[in-house]
Structure formats: structure tokens, C-alpha cells
Amino acid sequence: MALPPDQAAHFTGLLRKAGIRITRQRVALMAVLTSATDHPDAIDLHKRTKAHEPSTSLATVYRTLAALEAKGVIQHHNFEGGGARFELVPKIHHDHIVDLDSGKVIEFKSDKIERLQAEIAAQLGYEVLHHRFELYCRKISDKG
Amino acid sequence: MALPPDQAAHFTGLLRKAGIRITRQRVALMAVLTSATDHPDAIDLHKRTKAHEPSTSLATVYRTLAALEAKGVIQHHNFEGGGARFELVPKIHHDHIVDLDSGKVIEFKSDKIERLQAEIAAQLGYEVLHHRFELYCRKISDKG
DNA sequence: GTCTATGCAAATAATTTGCATCATA
DNA sequence: TATGATGCAAATTATTTGCATAGAC
Image (cartoon, rainbow over all chains, first blue to last red; front, side):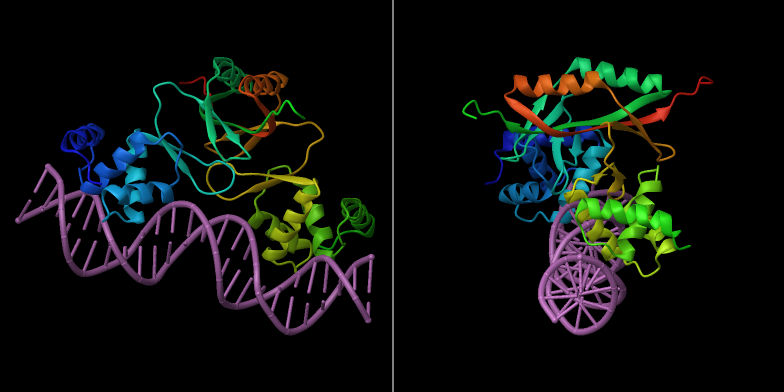
């Protein structure tokens, strides 16, 4: 389950670029974050990281997530129900649809929304530092 | 600090309409919810309710809030930082700006946003059951 | 060698629940 | 009087922290 050396080198580089110390646990977590496409929570990340690096504790996962977020490498979301869920900071900002039946998270982007929110805030004398825009949805079934 | 009888009758009516049993603690909490304009959290509601009805426990506040939410009388929000905050369900839906400096919550509404979110979801085969739209903002100061 | 990261277990914070008792319908 | 509500204290869940030790630079 350990990472091939070439891949490990890649994640080591990402950590170095983030400016935090390189440890086996962090390299493993970085690998997990990079390959995840499902917005996992801390518990999930811990499970997956342990598969690469069994010595990883949940406390270290939380501490490393906090460090990576402070460095702008990852971001977290607090969707309804359950704890925070994490993803790498995307090149292009997006918002989320949460499928209430499956719990799955779908990403979408809308420039109109981004513009509208800035307008709304400006009209009230505010500038937007960040926002949350989450749609809690159900699949439309054509057979009623 | 007890409520004047006429006001108490009003809140009793609201509880009866909601279809839940009437107790002194619930009448007091209903009074607090009705007069609040600041999206208080459970701890705040408990403090304020105790001013009317000192026998009220925090557990009862939580239980009553859950009952009122189930009946569609109130709704809660999980803004960043701290616990859930509550408000009566407004006649007209609105979203929120959170002032990051003061912690104050400002309400706004936008039909465009409502329409846009429905469109976005529909394009992906979803219908929106509810949403979260929160702008975390700072006041624009004209003196730089 | 120094300074930071780690594991573990205990501490927090917000909320929920079990249980015996009490109040409402 | 029967059922549902209450207070209190203990339980839960997600997360954070203190501390002694191990590991990175």
C-alpha cells in the first residue's frame, strides 16, 4: 500500500511548495486528497490515509488539514449533516449541489451567481470575502 | 419579568396553531422568538427565555426548537463559527449576509438568485428542495 | 541539535438522550 | 388520570489540545 517512489516525490513537492514540513503521514494524506473526487470528511481521509501510512492518527489528519488550509492548498465545506468535508482548492471556483438521496456532492459554476452576489453585497455597502452557495436537491424522475 | 396576560394569550395561540402542547416554558420561548431580530443561537434563546420563565432548561429550549421547526414555525441556520441560529419562518424567503467584523446578520432577497438556482439545478437533472446562500462580508469603507 | 510533528488520551463545544417527576389536556 | 413535557446529568459527535516522544531539517 505504500506509494511508489516517483509518486511520493510528487506529493513531497506539493508539501514543500506549501511550505510545511514533510512527514510520511502528510505525504500519504496529500496523496489521498489529490486522488479524492468525492469531498471526503476527516474520518474518511483518516481511513484512506492509514491504508498508505498506518501510523497516521486522526489528530494528525486534523492538524495537517488545518495547516494545508492555512496555506491555501485545501478548503473545507460544512454541508448539512455530518462534519466538515474537504477538497483541494480548485483552479476555478465552483459551488455545490448536494444530492439529498445519495449524499453525493456535485460541483457547478455560475458566473452569473458570482456577479449577482457581488452586486447584492455592494448595494448594502459590503464586499464579499467568501460565500456559501449550496443547493440541496433531489433527482427529477420523469416517471412521476 | 412574566408576560402580561394578553401577550401570553397571543403566544399560547401560536403554539396551539402549531399543534404542540402549551407549557409556560414554551410560551416564554415563543415570546422571545417573536421579538428577536438578531438570529440568536440556543444559548441566547435560553438566557432570554429564563428572564421570562426561570424554570426553563437548555434541554427544553433545544427540544422546543426542534418541535417548532418540525411544525414549520421556525428555521435554523448554521453560519460559519458557533452553533445554529434561529428565526421565525419569514413570510417571504430571504438569504443572509454575515458581517465578519461584527457578526451581525443582514437579510436580503433576490428573485434573480432564486430563479438562477432553479435553472442550474434543472440543467443537471435536479430540483432544489432548499438551499443555503450566505455572503460573508466586510463593510466597504470609503476612506481606504 | 533544535524545533516541529506525532500519537494518545483527555478536553471542548454543541447538541441529544435516559430517566424519574411533573404539568397539560 | 394518561400522555407528553421538564430538569438534570450523562452520552454523543466532531474537533482540538496537552504532553512526552519521535522525526525532520
